[in-house]
Image (cartoon, rainbow, N blue to C red):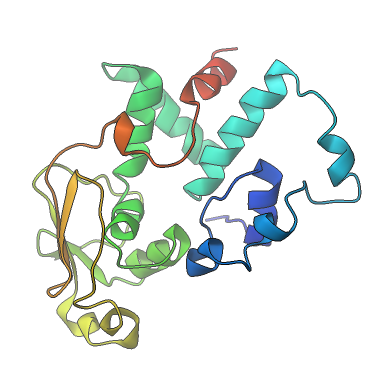
Length: 208
């Protein structure tokens, strides 16, 4: 499957906000958006003086969310179409679907420092759902599902460093850092999304 292989820090600068694509680096002074809060390229500073059009605002909002969750356009639009078919506000349903991706849940449980790393953890078969190995990052978790690190991977350095540490999770998840297991206790709602997202702009863009 195709994937973005460019510089993650340029992505954050282009979207004008932290997308936490580089893990711990994003919360330090080394974060590029702290040092250079302009759009990448030779005309970056000049672009700040231009008033964006309505379409530009909608496009940037879509790109921001798409890049935060590490999706390509076709994948992202699939979530929009699925949300449109379900009951409720389309924007909120779409965000809930994105949050319930297995790679995002692993990230929310603190088993990795970024969604990119957590996608790799899932791809490599280090995660189980209800005792069965699942290596599909887009797998949709459900209420009651138990997500865990496989026993043969727990003692690896990657997980040994977080074992027993204090992990803060959103209220729809609970975690046992000693056993490196987590449980989905509810579906995520709009207040659980910590990114600054105006989902109505995305819906307006796709509704054109």
